[in-house]
Image (cartoon, rainbow, N blue to C red; front, side, top):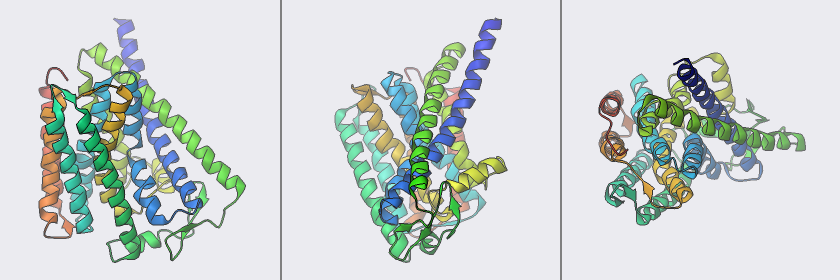
Length: 365
């Protein structure tokens, strides 16, 4: 009995440590990668549409990569689908509940349609609990479309009257961000007054260090989740939908609530910010799209066979994601603003989803 209790405690400590390492590593690697791409002369709108968007989903991507490589597909699929549900139902909901949000309506509608299309692919091309290769190909095609759309949007965001364009162009000029000082130029490229070989090496080192921390954290989460699932006699999908997805959402939730988790994380998150605060709602929606259109195909490629998508995910995660996307999409078709009631509705859907997952988990997941 004592040995079992000790194993549970060690697994919980490993789980928490993995969450911390994944959060710190993903932020550090993402910020330093953004710095290096901008240093190489990439325009600001290209970096914002590619690297900055991809970095938001780094923790789920790394965990799915490792879990599928180890044939722990329930955690890989759960990290993707439950992550998308939590991003919208919890993080974006709290951001909307705090105050109404002005969005670039055309881009927001297109991103919602992309998310709906990804969910429909899962509904149609998951047969006998396995995601077909056609479905994987369609998801990858949607990812390519997402990247192209994001680049075009970032170009308009910088050069047109899109909401928040001025803030992106003049975001904290001259302020130190992570390992370099940046300021924006009129043509949308990034110049670095502190540019030097030493600074470049620091940021390259930051990518390597952040990647190592992220990998170690993701591996610790995989080991701890499997151990806790085996010790408690629960399905792995339950941990993916519960503690894993909630843990990954904590840093984003802290940002949505103005960092209530403490001053240390606030300072680190602000120094490693890869997008202006006004773009936060759009990046959360981007993260949900990437969880389905990028994380799932990567998991399928690593698994090297048709990826199992259990009944748990088909019954709960996909329908919840569709409902919340419709709640966000319909008002956006006629107005540029997102409202508090939409946040309340999405949060309600998420709570119902979470209760269903915890109280009535589906067999075969």
